[in-house]
Length: 195
Image (cartoon, rainbow, N blue to C red; front, side, top):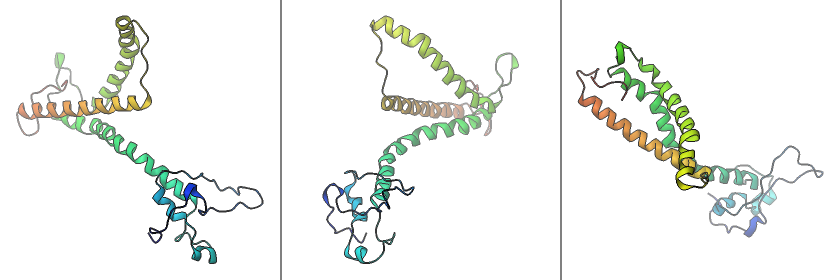
C-alpha cells in the first residue's frame, strides 16, 4: 500500500529478487516476471530505504512472491465456477438423503430402499452414463453425422458439467416442491423415493 504511487518499471526491470550465491540456486525456487496484474509489481519496487537497510519482508517482496500471488489470482475465476459443482456434491451427500428419509421408501414388492443409499445413485448414474456415452451415444452420433466427433476441450467439458449440475439442482428443487405438495405430515410424504 505504501508503494501505490510508484511507477511500475517496464518488463520487470529493476524489481527486487534474491541474488544467487556462487552461481547456485540455494534451494530457492524462482518464478519469472509476467506482465499480468502489473499493479502488484509495486510490492517488488526497490526504494531508497530498501537499498540502505537490509531487505525487510514487510516493506519489499521478491518477484517470485509477487508472481505466486498473481498465480493464485488467476485461479480465482476457476474456483468460483467450481463452487457450483461443490454445491451439487454436497447436495448429494446431504439433501438427497434428507429428501429420501421424508419420502415413501417402500417400492416394488414391499422392498424398502434405505435413504442412505442415495449416495450410491450418484455413482450408479455416472457409471451408467459413461457406458452409454461410449457404447451408444458416440456410435449413434457417428452413424447419423457420418463422421468422427471432435471431442470437447477441457474447458468445454467443465462447462457441460456445470450446466448439468445446474439442471440437477433445478430438478431437485422441483422434486422438493412435489414432495412438500404430497406431504402427509410434516416428516413424511407419499411421493416415492424413486423421484
